[in-house]
Image (cartoon, rainbow, N blue to C red):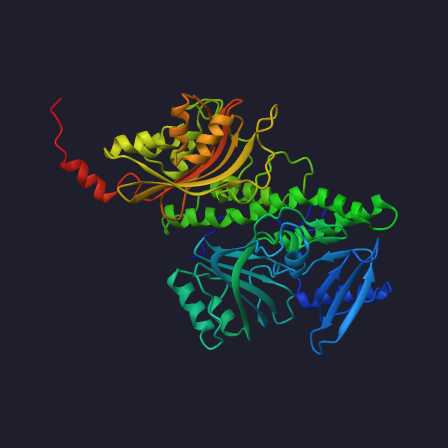
Length: 531
């Protein structure tokens, strides 16, 4: 937000695929409606679906829809229903098995403010999207029209804010946003953000919401698509891309069917898109670019240039988010896991022994330089099932483990390839000493042993305790690590006790994990024998 350059992503296309296109939603709607009319397709708007019946007439589905203005009822008959009615989908809520009466919307405790300003001075080359700010406050600004002779064009913008309730009062919205940008040090010499907000005629405010993964998208002749199936956070135009991939996959599925667009065709569509869209959804939830920019704000002094390594990291993580779907993806992890677990595929940069990070053993050295890890953080980084013991020894106090979430996972395809697990769990625990929390751990647990399954489901135990109870020595792999917005370390790793249990774990530490004031005073007051 202070104008320093962190990285540039080339979105111009490669000749085979088009680059990113920015267009006003109204103009895009006109294009779609004109195209439909040219093909003789009737489009009815301002209708709200009130009922769907696919049981009364074999091979057919009936839709009842009300005119939103007059309440007049319209009855339509067809061979299938595509529910593309957005994140707040009523079709999903009422008609797709596993979603009835369940709200999969996930609220992120952030607000989104959006606006469009016309005849505003063009910035940079008139074609560039800029993203300024990190995790707490972020501004995304880009043109959606060609500059006129006077250098003016239509600008679309969004500001995301870490706050529980959005400001919906038109009389105070602009002042609220301008104050937030000022407080957070936004100062771009090429773009007057204050004037941009002031000159915007109206601002839309709504919560930052995406969807938790659904169990399925189809129910007979009813199928979800777009945001109704896989609503995503606004990262790299992810939802728009996902919608386009949906359209291509649906075309492929219907062409394969050749005949009537039946339940089989919709199942084929779901098979083509479900895993990839869910993975894409999860990667967007990570918001990797924002975390990297926040890391710059937290660790690089404002008077210093940003090292080139951050641009390379930006390109790597956004390529991971934006790459077209690969239907052979084998490392799919649902988005119910902690966000950082999804930042990079586990196939890269694995640890092959507890203290060796890759050939040459230099990942810890790299992390120490880039994340400025302390010696104690390096100790925690390589803990393999003994984290509780390390902290207990350091503070001379017992570690308490509380299990906050423990439930059967909806889906998992990343376990022991030679043997199917008895059960797969999503688990979230907190660790504290004398009431002070120092670590939160989110894990995917695959159980292959019935006795161990009973222990885990009936007792409040940490992973380390579980391993010690069975005298297990896991194979440890460190996949990634970094620093969170609170200054604490996070790490993503796996442990495998082959044929018995394996874990994928993300641990996020508090900023004062190694310097909890109350605990350090307790330690200093202890009487120790002279050695």
